[in-house]
Length: 147
Length: 410
Image (cartoon, rainbow over all chains, first blue to last red; front, side, top):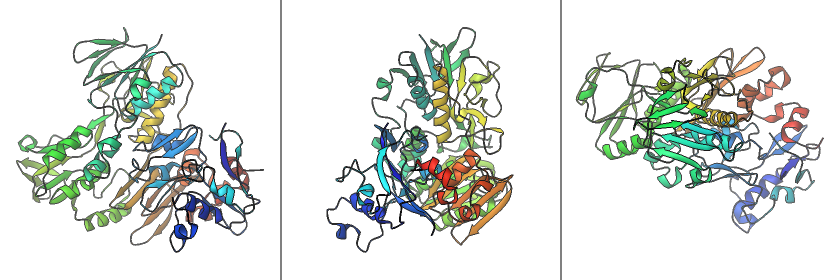
């Protein structure tokens, strides 16, 4: 069992702050204004929904990840339960976008795919979206396996 | 102890090895690899020529993969016969390898029509393997005019790969549109226009009547001079080993959803296999990476006395040319929903309350949400399809489905 990011639709305000915290955590910069102000952001979590319901979506770190199996460049791999992407291997073919049932992968600024790696590889060390969620709608916990 | 033999060393073979090792730590594994390379990402050969990747990033698995999996790989060896009675595989050097379970992951070969005068063409290449890419890399120079026969995935990716290395690229295809295997005529027209803007020339609905050295005489009467010829007319599954022992072969080696063939203890996976297509229910060869991996892994688990079913295969392709992305899946049958602009196209095909297939061109939508509907055969009536057809979003699913999908708090 591993910890994953889960979202409680009931509590999600649809404020999109998680997207900003995500983009900042993965920017490699220490100043949020420098990292985000006036720039398009490429977060690895995104808010979906309509006026009635909203929720944030990020990688489910599937037990049997179809993206990893499908990647033509072997850029996606599973490392201790975390699905990771090697940006130096990815050629931006969109096969992972075509197969992920959650819509959890999208290209970054450079056209190379990016995805949630639970902030384990950046300075944050734990999911920034969870830390930053003002309504505690996003949680990081163990709940069982995803298919 | 089990003795597993795998013929082939591509993605299907490697996933087969991983499938075996997920179940059986100790059995002996022998891989017969005609190519002299460790497993590499075959679809990247065009990206290699384009300079978008290099050899150090093209490995499909780590350098120590075979060691870690405790496999013996016979490089540069070709299997020439299967001896099903004695459960042995005969190799081109006369040696025999015994098996308890055999996986045919033999892939496919370029299909080359019997063109008149083809042998008079000095510089001719196919485009399937890393060695093919090396050959082209050495064989082409900046002043060369390249003629590619075939405007399908292989021909077009090859064209993109060598565009920066040649003076011109012309593609000829028997079909009346590009990418005939994955696009309809209107979708193809968008892609063709984009490719023409990048300097490619097309001779469609046409074919070569004969070659004479550096000239191709087309059926239409057109005459094309070229320096380098690439043959990308299609692929044919490598089935002969299995055909020779009387196994059931359609276009590919027929397999069930456990990748078992008609012959006991022989499995098949990848480009050489013909399994069920969930979008049509019919059997067909699905020569695509995701399919090869799933089939290979499934074969491996079952060879090792595990129990795995893969019954979710469907045709799907994601491919980009000079920044224009094309994503397709399923079959293009039934009622059409369409959105179109000058540079983009979205087509969804529905039938019997199911999404059967789609074409997305110039889109960065989260297409996997559509693909999963086809794969899981989700009834359209169970989702908010008016929303979903406009945007690929899980918001179109009922809250209960979404809770299950995302594991959210109830």
